[in-house]
Image (cartoon, helix red, strand yellow):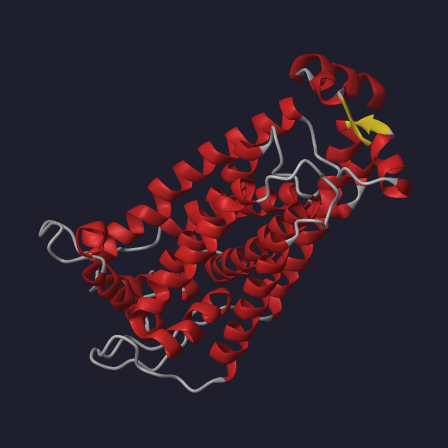
Length: 344
């Protein structure tokens, strides 16, 4: 009976297409970080669709709508917390995936576009995190919105979208809500499609080293095995996040008080906050821009023919230096006292 059902599903859904050959090492968790990121993004999309049904993207209704969601919407508190925890999970998995892919030098010819698509996805995820913070519209969200406005004013024509002069017909909060729920997700989905297409047709890079690692990479399996194991990790991740969402529900602060700057941002952005402590408001623009521009330039900077993992030379040492700097800024932002950056 079970075998018959499996055969019927396989025929109707063309599941035999999953039986193409892949390197044997891809059954390891470190090769599933990209897949776990995609799964958590799916959780974010589903939970985000639910949350958007209750959200009022206006300066007078946003905070009250979140309170309604928490206190009265069916499973609203749990789903909102699951959304926030999944956002943090995505930051962790995409960062780990980028670091491991960088170490393997999987950006080498002919996979430059695959790498660039991944970096752009990471940049979109960063924007989704910071725009999502605004939508709380408590004191933290209000200050995040003020930072968008300050950044728009600092960057002139390039940041005009984030200024009040862009259009009088909608508030900046409404436009950021539109970015968070439509434009950024659509761009992200397109990049994911491109990324997976290139991986499917260019293959999974397993490193060019010799020895045991090279021999393991030479062994092959089928993608169905990889996908099945990935599904198991994904379900375990979802269960853990679901339990955490029950145990530590995400709260919301009091309605915003204009003219004060007293909060710190969502934890993945604390390194930017630390940089603002050093450079002022320009830190929130220069820091992320420098990091993502460096990542985009990596395939152009590491031009050697050698593809041995971890042997990037000065490019690798520069990446390590930037990583240490980010961690240091994150610690500084986490434990340093709150400061004013934009003169609210």
